[in-house]
Image (cartoon, rainbow, N blue to C red; front, side, top):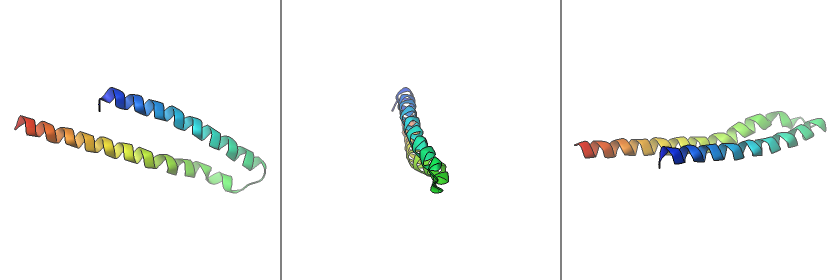
Length: 77
């Protein structure tokens, strides 16, 4: 995958994820105004849910990078 395509994918995904977080935050603030006490954990839940795709993307990038180095070593040998 070309780096430009990868960067474009990350930027597009980031914008969509921020929009979803804003909707969750608005719902949480309304619940907090109504007296709910479980709303304080919403930030931890958002971080947890965002960490899984980020770990997957990072690990795919590292595998791709490792594969490139392996192919480059085979070519130079």
